[in-house]
Length: 120
Image 1: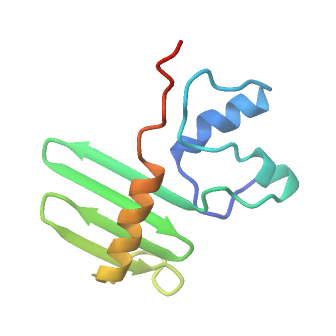
Image 2 (image 1 turned 90 degrees about the vertical axis):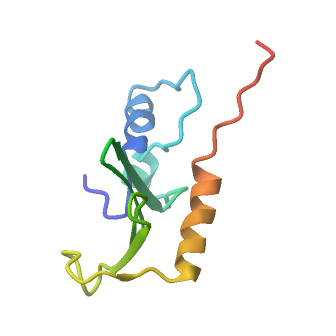
């Protein structure tokens, strides 16, 4: 089946574990896509996030629906795209402060380290 909503690689492990009837033994950021695929359940996190860190580049990309933002931490540039009118991402526009705030809040909530119990 094909998932049309934005998803990312963090959803692979939870999906495979769910398909095997297992639960991860450690905290994971993603979610199983099986309920969405099999039962048409809404995604818990309908956005996708990607990041690359190399000695010469650090890029982050966030997508929600038809909106996409790419942050270039080397240059400080933030480009926004409307994928409904520019699906090939050929006409970037500067990301607004409002949109950057939304991306920042999403990163703070979804990429924070999971709480780990020290009482083991």
